[in-house]
Length: 354
Image: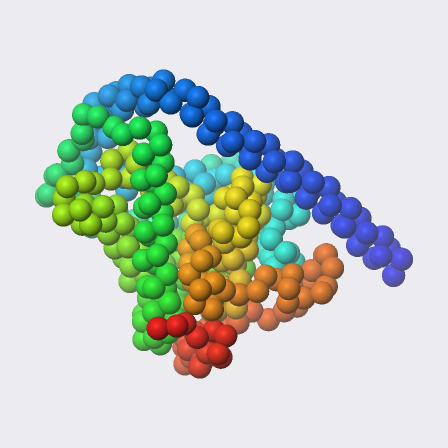
């Protein structure tokens, strides 16, 4: 009994130490972001000239001229981000202290060596390649259309374009996601497979691509609409710059992998920007384990306005670390009642106008 008590105290001390490390890294990154913003304000002309020079080189590159350039970068961004989390678990012995509170005691390390992490690709990755890349490759081959402009907007405009696309995608996906949970048929056909992560087995970054064919193309359709939304809104007068579109795709893949990772990393956007404006892994993990609520991808404002935002794990339990979450039952997703949200929502969970 005494040994167990000492072990718990040791865990608490290690947890506090790792939390201090994360907080320091976050503060350094915040200062770096502020320094970059101030640096751009002071040297705006020089930064814009450098961006134009870089674009002049990129637009002559064969890869950037390729119609399937953006999907190509999406694939390799997924592989790189997955590799980062795999290596973190393989090389850092205290990685479990960086998990979000709700995942502690449940999350399973992959058990691969650092060398195996480099070449590992899951079977689901090959399936998603067939779902996603094969149709796009065929379409791009028979309908080449990529035209790269000579110039590029300022750094500030490119950043605003990326932010606009992220906000548009988040808004579109919220309503698609909500509909899949509210309609039993859509849930079974489109979304049930993805919710195996968090119910059948603990969630990790590889489950980002645990998608049915229907949901894969729901995501892709939302993204295709997003990158063309400015063109649609202005009837073709304006459109998002190809480099802004590429950055948007890279950021989207990174954030998708982060929110399924079950880790609370110091560089994640919900840590860099306070006030819970961004949800992050904590927000999305709750959606998977509880089976409803928190329908937004990145932000939290729609969930707050519609009454679908879930309380944080710390607000629903008083148990100290280490949290024995392994003893808690994850919500089952049965074939009869496919989604917990199929049940009649209570008053606080109803969505106004839905």
